[in-house]
Image (cartoon, rainbow, N blue to C red; front, side, top):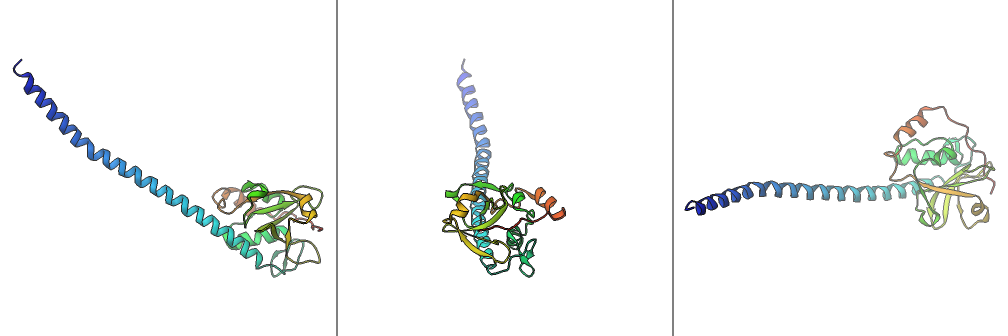
Length: 204
C-alpha cells in the first residue's frame, strides 16, 4: 500500500501530459473552425454585394436602351429589340449569361419574388397575348419597369399603376445573384439551341 501515493502521482503526471498534448490540437481545431466561419461570412457578404451590384447594373443597362426601336425578333440595339430580345441583350452585356429567347422560357428560371419584394433588375412578366408569360420587362424600382412594347413603338418605361399592366401581371423572377451558378446547364442548352420564335407584341 505504500506505493499507492506514488502510483497516484505517476497517474496525475501522465494525465497532465495527455492534457498538455491534446490542448494544442484542440486549440488548432478551434482556430480552424473560426477561420472557416469567418471565410463563409465574408463569402456571403461578398455574394450579397455582388448580387446588389449586378441588379443595379441590369437596371442601368436597360435604361441605356430607352428609345431603341421595337423590332419583332430583334436581338440587338442596332437592328431593334422585342421584349425578350431586350432582356436577353441586357443580361448578355451585364452578366455574360445568355438567357433563353422567349419570355415564357425566361419565366422558368431564377427565384420567384412577390410584388412587395421587387428590386431593380428583377424580371416582370405579363399576359399580353392571351397566354401567360407572353411579355417581359426589367423592373427599375418605384413601381416602374422598362420594356419593348410593340411595333411602331420604342423601348420605354411603363408603370404598374396602369390598369392594363395590373390586370395582366403574371409574376416576377430574380436572376441577379442566381445566374449563372443556378442554371449553367439550362443556359448552355438554350444558347446552343436554335432560336425560338420571339414573343408577339404587347398592346398597352
